[in-house]
Image 1: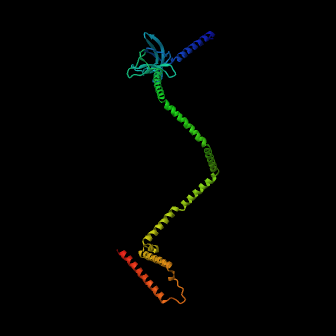
Image 2: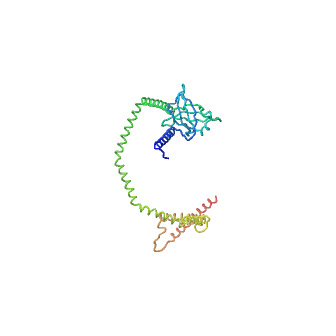
Image 3: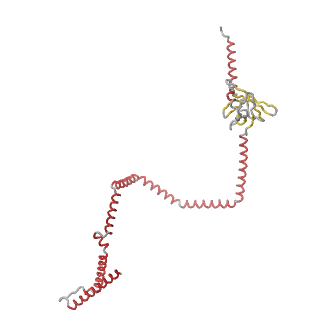
Length: 330
């Protein structure tokens, strides 16, 4: 049996109409493949709300606005909510009407209550209007502008009161700027010379970088050689030997120790030094006593005079020694 052409066209038209209707409902937020129930809420004003506006629960869309009607001095909103989410809405929940985002739009957000019983289809959910974010921002902006106006008025009053001081400060600042410019102009040649010397210095360093690296390498080699030669250990050994020598001298051992610690030897050397000084003084004063040029030798008088001087000198030396010993015993 052949299907007539008119029947095919009619069948295709019905399919297109059904698909279009389903698409329109889907664009309005309705999913015909899921079961949904109607719930209602009342508001004084629903400016910005439209049919197909979203109904949200904790940030998740659970339905959409199906119908908006006036009932006396209230506005009734019919919400189409999917049945699987109805069990999450206690009876004391609130349908809060507010802005969807900063970009605009209005939506209804279900604020869950704490009751154990959940809403039933066709039930009325308490409605309230969320404070308008734009209005709140406008109020805050008004307060901010008022504060800014107060601040500006205070600044203007402060500037008016201290105008002379400010002018004086500006004048001083201008004079200071002129002085700084003059100083910079006067020192420009010195600054240019300093910069030129600095450039020359850096260029010299760059040109002699190889020598500098070699010098650093030599220093590193010297320090390595010192470390490998056990310089510290040798120095410690030398100091130990020096300490031993000092202890030996302090103990009186050896020639140096006897020379340093023997007081009698020190006194004898001191006396010898005094005698030598006296002899040199007498030699300078009476050189003829010690140098004689005689063809016939010394006379008896000279010999006796010499013996008397020697005896006097020996006596003087003995008295001096006795005085030292007496002083030492005291």
